[in-house]
Image 1 (spheres, rainbow, N blue to C red):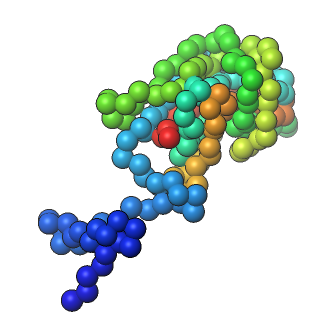
Image 2: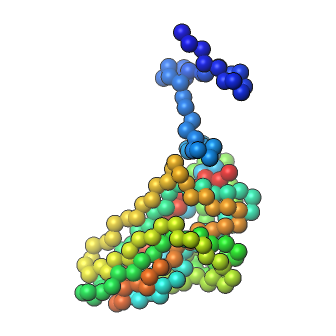
Image 3: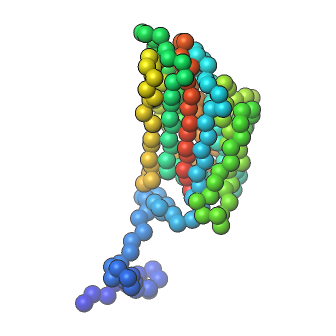
Length: 205
C-alpha cells in the first residue's frame, strides 16, 4: 500500500469516505482554480426594444465594467439574436463582437445587476448596462476584439442560433477597472430590425 504525502505541507492524501476515491482540484497553468467553489456570478440582459435597421459599425450595445479590487475571470459568454423585421433579399450581413474597454464607464440604456451563484458573496463589478440603440461612450478606450460573429441578414422568421462561448479552463481575464462590451464591428443589415439577449458568467479573485 502506498502513502502519498505533500512535500510542501506534509499532509497526506485524503480519500473521500463516501466514494472511496481521492478528489482532485484542476488548476490552469497560471495557477488558477478551474472550477472555484466561491465567488461565482452571472448577469443577463436584453434589448428593451428592437434594434434599428442599418445600425452603424462601432455602436456599443452592452457593457460591464469591473470594480477596483479584484480581477474577473469570465467563463462563459452567450449571445442570442432574433429577427423582428426580416431583411431584404440579398441584404449584407453585419457583425458584432465582444471587446475590452477601459478608462471610463459607458452610460445610458438599462442598468443590470450581477447575481451571485452563492448568496454569501458580493460581486466587485461596478456597472452593467445595455441598450437597443447605443450606449454613450465618452472617454471610453476600446481594446482588442475578444470574439466576433456575423449578424445574419435574416429573410425568414427563424431566429439565429445562440452564440455560446464556454471558457471554463481558459477564462478571459478582465483586470481591475477594466471592462467587456458588446459592440458592432460591421454595420448591420439594412431594413432588418432585430433583438438580442446575453448571459455572462465569471468568478472573481
